[in-house]
Length: 111
Length: 113
Image 1: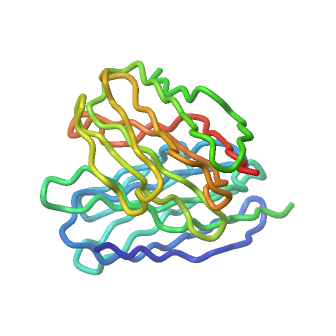
Image 2: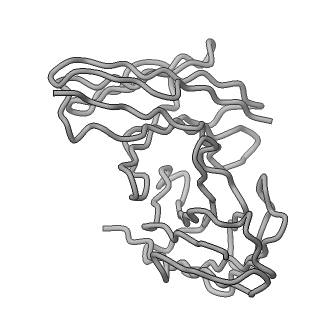
């Protein structure tokens, strides 16, 4: 089975930096994803990590440590439009290509 | 741009009705998925398919079935809708290892009354 944990809700101030953590326990590992989902909309892909380390993409970065079963999504220079739910998803091993999702972290950005 | 299109954005059905949710993708992806999303529970996998006519149960298949007669189309069927199936339903597709991320449709908010 797979277990994915992330905080339920976070708040931050416009212009600040926020880090959203995700810990997981899976049988095998074949990649970790972060998605952004605005209220009432479909999730959209942000990042994919399969090797340890930091992947940077503009204001967003994602980090993975496979040995610790840990990832984080780092959002810099926060904007109001970053208020959304952030979903961590893990793909298990054994040839499975099915992502299992955490319950999501609702990020509220204040002016 | 990859497009995953779900046939309806909003649906209201009566208890006991048979309900069809349709999903079409235009990028020749092998894998297709149906999730439901409920507050506090996140996305839960109902069924997935990795090829035409192939299907596998996800975590919560009870009360649902699926059909994949063509590669681009994946249908979710509620055999006899019940009020506890009121939810947001999301279809997704992917094509690992070349396309690892899942592309989602806009979602169907189903209300069963």
